[in-house]
Length: 386
Image (cartoon, rainbow, N blue to C red):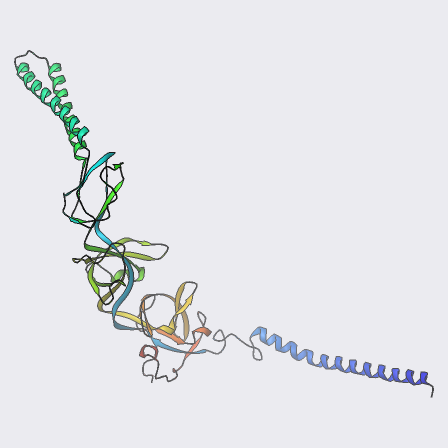
């Protein structure tokens, strides 16, 4: 048989096989198409044969829930604070003048009214002498004029003019006395002076700081707490402060006041405590750790695993009449395995501890027993559980 004929026959056989394979594949696809269409419709409609959302019109979702309960809990709060002097001021000059005498040494303890700095007072004393001389003359003239007025020698207008001059000279004496007093700088309260920033002969200008004065016999300790603890902190609450500068040493004090405003950005409030500092070891500006403990009180607790954080808020799922209700709550103090709920929940309501990730608001639920776990904290196990 010629080679050309063999090639023609082989090509025909191959073509026939290819056509048969394509026809078989199309037939199988046509058979499966109705089945796939029915399954897809079932999936979309939620009918048997297709998947459905758990707990939403389908079988109830199995969950574990425990009741929220009232327990005794002591407030324990830790915060970071900054020490401030009970009284603090910069000692400054009120007028431009030359320093003549410095009466204090750096770090010296002074009493209220002690002279700290003297400045050149020659001009002030001269002005004072002139004003006193003018007052003396006008005083004598005023007394003579009153005697003459009784004899009708002086008129009302003349007497008023002499009296005005007398009062004007009195005011000049008072002004000269004030300028003379400004040449002496005194301590406004008892305390400890800081570093000296002037020397004898220095020309100081108004507002120039010559030294500092701090009353550190008691320390004001300012710290911030979250607004959720605002109701638990009140004046008189005892605190304990510690400083890294004095390891192993603590400083006791009491809360003196709570700020009247809450910071809208940080949602915190500033608290001020008074800490006695008789030895003077605490300095203004020191960093302190504050510990507060309040006596036990009845609070509402739920297990930690009930909380569902979402976009900055905290929710829990409450089971009622076989349905799960999503509830916004505000939390307070925490302890191992449990969290205080400040509002949004009442004692005895069932809150979901297991299965929250499968729930939606309004979903049907079925209560189940929690798995035995002897290592779990008591607050995380339902009543009667192992």
